[in-house]
Amino acid sequence: MAQQVAPLASVQTKAEMVDRLNKAQDEAHALSNAIEDVEVAPELNNARAELALAMRTVTLDLGRVRGLVENGDLASGKGLLANLKSPQAVEDAIAAVQSAG
Image 1 (cartoon, rainbow, N blue to C red):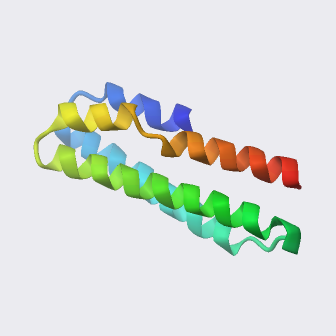
Image 2: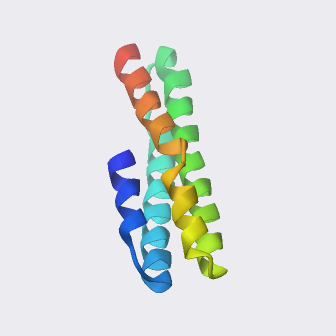
């Protein structure tokens, strides 16, 4: 996840950043929906819910970054992007699912 988000910081223009953030946010949203729709054994329900929540958080964080960029603050958007904790939370949730299942 961090490898998907980190390259966004190298984008140089507002228009390209907004476009790439929209795509990334759409993908994160689709993934969170797909995760929630997966049938799992009862003992994996909490791990699945944690992973879906982590993906939703990525979606929200990308929206916050996009808001800054759309309002003309590309530098702050990049700064926020560089400091997001949600991609690591997704990786941690994936590890939890793997160890639980």
